[in-house]
Image (cartoon, rainbow, N blue to C red; front, side):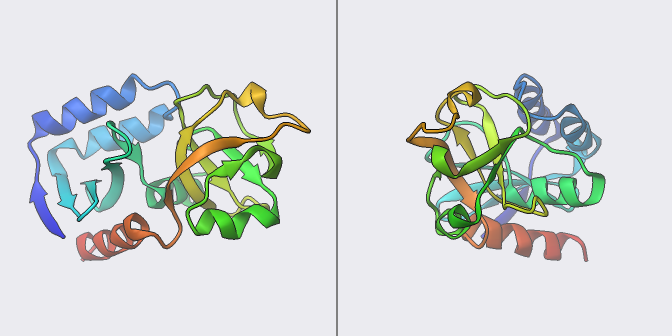
Length: 178
């Protein structure tokens, strides 16, 4: 992985794009603004992560053309500030291991929705006890389509616990907090 500083102007472009996405919590965007002068890009083989301050905050892959909050960042915000960066769904126990292995969140495994979302929004996925988020991705359907008896995929899994982006985020956080 290669780390390079990015200009304040380039960081502002990314932040402005995030500000326009209704599904991203405004306090997360405000946090990024505080560190727009200390933004870094880390290039992995198949992804790019933007760190603001010491937080690996956003990522992009070839599967999506815009920046998405990292699973690491949404967990930090939830566990330290009790802020949900994105709308969330809570899954049953049977869905956790498949999600950790990269599977998409399926409608039958979803037990609760925190806030309405539309197709294309960024959505995080909670484990059943809602202590931590196990995945983050893009909604493949509107939240209104999640109903008892419905079938199909609900959230495209783009970053999950113990994947390359997760491991890189942990490494970046450790390196930048020194």
